[in-house]
Image (cartoon, rainbow, N blue to C red; front, side, top):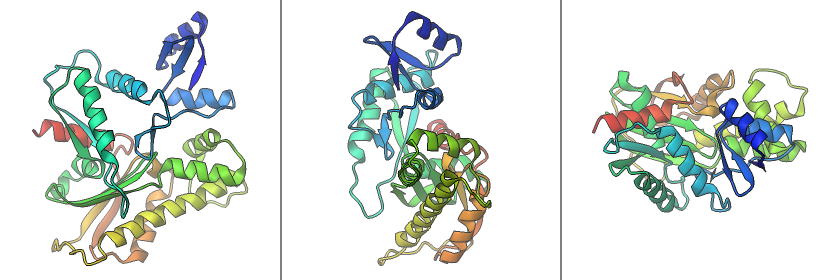
Length: 295
């Protein structure tokens, strides 16, 4: 989000190590602190990405993504280092619009001096991160802000993958629309205190439950659809695990809720267990790192 520039404000942000960029008489605050600042000012945050890809309606999206990537990589990394970045899978039954997004991220990395770059499917990255114990065989599900990404791999080889435009943003926007609250405020409620398995008198909490259940049902139905329509069902000879990652899986009770929906769906591929990633917010990045180090 943007706030008017002043030397005092910029110095305050620096003292608190809040990520920001000063330009044109404004300060653009990005990262986690932007949501809290927006809530205090009763404003919505602006998003450089939407539905898992660059936001075409945000004029500062490219500049902000470049700033974030530069901040993550730091200044001491060897320019010849292998860099892997995650990209979403094509939407299930929809049009694949990933070409521009993937090429633009690669261009930004090239502009920063990195030429040895490659992309990795987000769901597959989760498998790399969490399923070493099954020789990288099983399902990886990443419930992020813009999308839910799903992948199945056998010994690290992708078998199928897809994405659904029902991630955290869908939950926030849908809950906000039926409660009359600001989207940013709903997001903060979700991230700071929402959990399943409770009777809620608060309308925001109740709405979050409704749309979380909708997201879970959509992912499970997507898994069923991925194996329908004449597609061959992989025969592993044994049940395989399913790992849940991303910020969307953090609420208490999510894993149990997902497992119950999955059991009711009776997938043609046997699932041995449903488990959470060790660090759900870091799983995709860790998988991309493993992909980079394996080359």
